[in-house]
Structures are given as structure tokens and as C-alpha cells.
Image 1 (cartoon, one colour):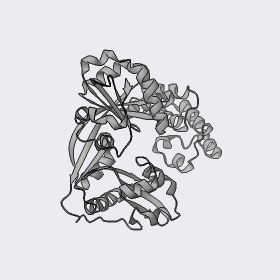
Image 2 (cartoon, rainbow, N blue to C red):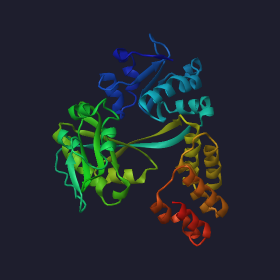
Image 3 (spheres, rainbow, N blue to C red):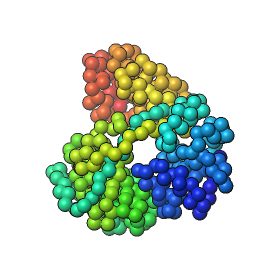
Image 4 (cartoon, rainbow, N blue to C red):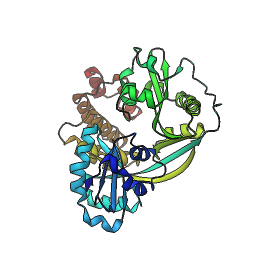
Length: 364
């Protein structure tokens, strides 16, 4: 696979048009987002791979698959591109989806994981959405005055603003959004992404302490009003099918489901690959398999505390007391320090009378 220059992307536009609801590709072709595009032939491409940060796409002639060593391509060029963009994974969509089956076999050594993915759409005809703002919260538009203020969570907001744009100023010049505050604390954001002509995608997040209060819906409705005022008429909402809170927010704000497809996630670090496999098995209530994956992750160099924590949760479900305390102590060794989460977690309530539980609380 050979990299295609950003000033020559028109040659692959017919290929990328197959991804109808992924506005990021339109911004890449138009030159407002600078991603990474590779083809198997610079003159007459049969296979096209495109990537912007963690979002990746592949399309083309399936019969040409044997012309490319995809494991070498991903471990080399794709992973290098991820490191440059400071992202830890690739989420790959494909047209046709048969590509995912072929690549799943080619990339088996990288432990790819397949997920169901959804796209919702809202078509705007007015700016009469009336958000019900939860008591104690304030919604504000993102602008220069806001980013010049001091508030808790500012770094997270600025980082999100730069997740697509090259700078905060570039975001302010080309994008827009709504943020929520609880006093001087940032409670969440709803920002435009990949603005192209009259369409954009949306990036939304609510900080953990402020969830389940209707804030996401309020931000979304206010964002839709702002979108209409900016002259756009279509907003796209992307999420994993397993993300029920995201789905509920989209539907409650007037979005409609327009597309479902498979994606394949590949993680750069082996520990993360194994641990995410553990999460998948955990969600299926396959706790023994989950623990096996988490243990593989913990055997890797520099594992994260959440991997041991999740292993402890899985062990609790199948009443492996020794493993529960072993993994909980390991999570603390690896840096876990959220005392309130320890105390409130429903997974560990049956162990609160155990002397080892008190010892863990003392450690924290």
C-alpha cells in the first residue's frame, strides 16, 4: 500500500463515496481535514484505505486482497500513523463488509474485535428545540471568551476541541458547540465535528458526576438550535450499538436511526487488546473467559489499574473470593485510588464483612 498525497485525493473520491454517512471522509477529500490515505496502486487503485485519527475505512476490489500484506501494513504504517496522531486504536469500517471477514483472518495475530455500530440522523427545519436544563446547570456557547476563562475541566475541553481541528483557534473559526457548567465545573460538551457544507457530526460527553440528570439531552437540543443558526440542516450521531445511554439521548432529541454496520477495532498495545476482549466477554456474562483475557493483559508490561479492577469485578460474579482480593490489591498497586468507587461498587457488597475488605479500604 502506498500513501496518496493530500492534493491528489480526487482519484479515490468515487471509492470513498460508498461511506455515505461518514462526513470525515468528505472533509478529507475537500482538504479541511488532513488524514492518511493509501492505495495499492497510485495510478489505478483497486484498494483504498483512509484514516483520520482513530477512524479508518477500507474499500475496493475484494479479489485484490492477496496483493497486500495487511498485517505488515497495519503494524507498520497504520500503527505509526496512530502514534503520530496520539490515538491508541483503529476503528475500521468497510465497504463491502466482507472486507472485515478477510481482514479479521489476515490480522488475527492483532486480536481484532468486531462491534455493531449505529448512525443516527437529525434533519433540521427550525431552531425551536427547547432544552429543559437540569437545576443547578448552565449551558453556554463555546467562544473565545469562554476559552479564556479559568474553570475546572478546561484542559479536557480544549483537548476535545483539538481532536479534529489543529488548534483551539481553528475550532473557534470553523466549528461550534455547547458546554454545560455546574458552578465553575465543566459538566459536559456537545461539539460539532467534520463540518462539511450543510452537514456535521456531533461529539458529546457528560462528565461522570453529572450523568443521569438529563444534561446530555439538554446540551443536544441546545446544540441543534445552534446548528440551525449556523446554517446547517443535518446532524449525524455515531455510536456503538452497545452504548444504550448514547442511543437514548439521540432518540429523545429527535434523531432517527439510519444505518447499522459492523466495525473492527484494533488496539496498538497488547494489554489493551486483551483487556477489551475481557470487557466483551464480561458484557456477555462469560466471567471465566473475561478473567482469562484480563489476566493476559495483566501479564503484559505496564498494565493499567482498570484491568485489575475489571478482573476483580468478574471474579466477584463467580464468587472467587481469593481472586477478588488479589485483583483489588493489584489494582491499587497499579494506581487505582478512587475510594468512593470502591465503597459504592455493587460488585463487592457481598465482601464488605470480610476483614480483607477493611484492609483494602485502609490501603486507600
